[in-house]
Image 1 (cartoon, rainbow, N blue to C red):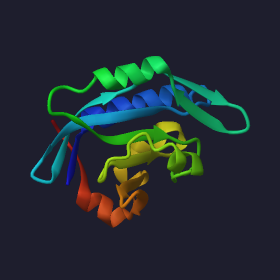
Image 2 (image 1 turned 120 degrees about the vertical axis):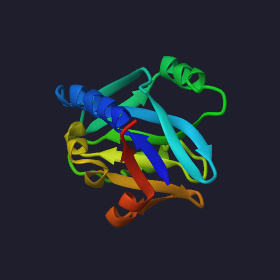
Image 3 (image 1 turned 120 degrees about the horizontal axis):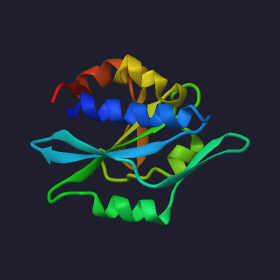
Length: 153
């Protein structure tokens, strides 16, 4: 089970909507703790990135952003999930599959539709994937509500 405070999802949504207001995607990662099989999100890391819109949307985390990611984990923390926006429907693109950001077994990928606006309807409006056996496996909406919970914290 993954527990994500609403404040983290709100911060992510605001960042994606800001980028989306300019027709751009955004990307971030959720850091937290893993204990007894559960994962507890603690904070959102929005690394320095360059977003482009030429024949589609793309986001690249810069070298500065990679250094931010390397320095943003507190003792005992791991990156639990990548969360990123798409301009339309939420799905895992070929680019998402080939540039996964996180590759640890059990990592999550949360794709937020409509430049972040979809997150206003909760995680059920997003596409969730889990990295299992070296591949991204889509999680059904029923499984999402059972495996990933937004919490007040």
